[in-house]
Length: 84
Image 1 (cartoon, rainbow, N blue to C red):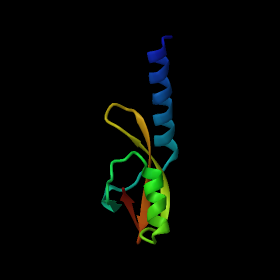
Image 2: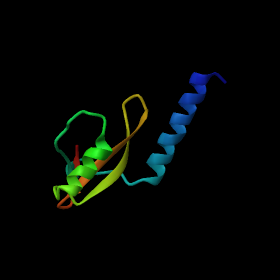
Image 3: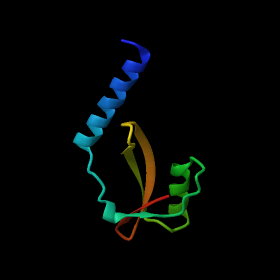
Image 4: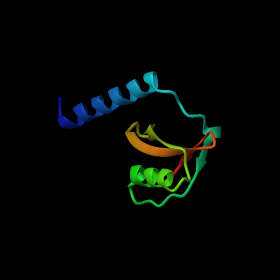
């Protein structure tokens, strides 16, 4: 098995596990917040909590259109998830 085949198989197993074991967020509850595009979503989310602009930090796994898993951190504010 080549490196690319092995990598694709691992990514597929991760995605299958995520879909089977994690609760999917409802798109209606997701709000786009500030998006600084600095690739520091965890630090950004923690900062919002420290500034009292969010209630907590959620770790999420998104799956892009090519089937690649992406770890992302979002905030919760007044019962809604806020991406940022």
